[in-house]
Amino acid sequence: MLYILLPPLLIIVAVLLFLAFQPGELKLRRSIVVRCPPGKAFDLVRDLRSWPSWSPWLLHEPSALLTYSDQPDAANGWYEWEGKLIGAGRISQVALHAPERLEQRLVFRRPYRFRAAVTWEFAERELDGASATEIFWTLRGRMPFLMRFMAPILGAALGKDFELGLALLRARLDASAPRLSIDFESDTELAPRSAWTIPFDGGLEDMKQAMAEGFPRLMEAAATRGVEPTAQPFTAYHAVDPKAGRFRCDIALPVPPGSDDATLELKELPGGHFQSVLVQGSYDFLELAWHAVMAHVRMRKAVWDRARPCYEIYVNDPGEVGADQLQTRILVPLQPKTR
Image (cartoon, rainbow, N blue to C red; front, side, top):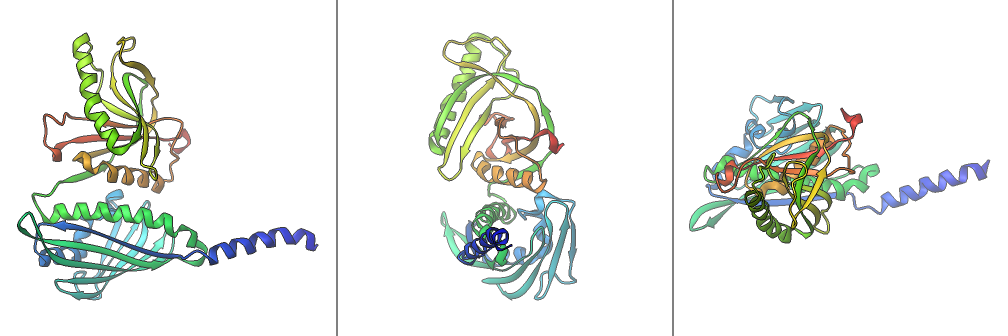
């Protein structure tokens, strides 16, 4: 009997030892500088009724049930959320030290249990010769013992959420700040498409340069040969390594099948079932938008089909509209069983 029980017992002991040596502590701190006085920023953040307009989580599920205390902007005030995608939890006001500091308590009940202390700090700054405020958003918590291994993963995800939330908050506080909106559309079916492509494999800054040169080259080739593009230009991402900051993709222009050009490769790129998301705002926001898109796919418990490329479709021309009006459609391929 001992020989039968020993292997699973050893596995259990190994797992417990592994968890015991994981720090399990979660600490995040992100900041942004906003053109507004500290008091204005303090008042907006402490009013929990304002959170749906800039929360990086509530944008995933605008229909989530929100419940507020009688005075959510005062000490001991709170709001709760309950949703199918974003789970359930509560944010409570612990202490208000206007206009410099705000302390809150965050409790997640679903999809996992987690408690954390949240601190907001509002420091006077100067930005381009004008009065401004640096907003610091800090979270400290400890993962349950059996979930300690998730602390680094959750920390990275929440860090991006904080950056997205601060960008949305800045737009609420400063009318001149860059605007960003993310609309999680219905799933879509995309037909296969022929496209002239320019391959790229490298880092982010080199990719930006390659795009700045590649798309005009594709459009010039179409004009020279009298070829009418069949849809908007796009980028097809075949592989992305976030840690290394490396991308393998095709800079692409859809053209009719059989369109020949000696200097460009004509590829047939796959269609299928996709999660569709419309992003409006500067291309500088696309990294945060991609983070939100992939988080949304996970929240839906959808399965990303890695055998097909993700698409970034440029809906309008940056030469014709301002940065705040730029529209980009992000398409993530999903496996059929997620329909």
